[in-house]
Length: 180
Image (cartoon, rainbow, N blue to C red):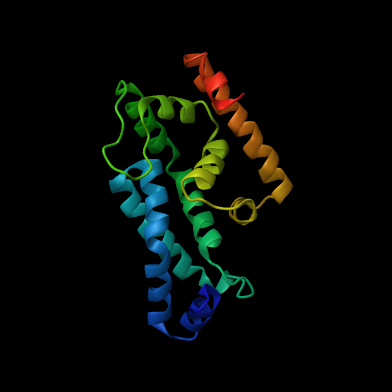
């Protein structure tokens, strides 16, 4: 398989189909992450904007990095920052749907999960959702969020502790079930 960096390099040299191949390779995972964060309609717009921005900024891409996924997630996360207020309204709406869960097999946000996510800062939400739903490694998270891997490990640990405490506040037996 051709590396992402090669596709970006070819697109810089006028091969429009090369960037199209990059789009088809990464769009589903970027869209799935965004849909889990802001809902389907907003995800369509944000995913399209992610690739529009990536195409416009492809000359800034470090062609020495073979995998463009973390770079694309970084663009998506930056777009989410701009979309923050809408995201919070969406999560609050989900939180008020008592016990309702999304009816798909895709990652979703039920009322308890939405409330827990609202208890986190935006940076903590981005970190935990990139880790859990986008299945990024610590090293990839480091690239996306532009912080050292050690910082990723400590932030992720603190975020997990916050989530455990939040769920335990609603169900004291929770900590016994997950082993503290």
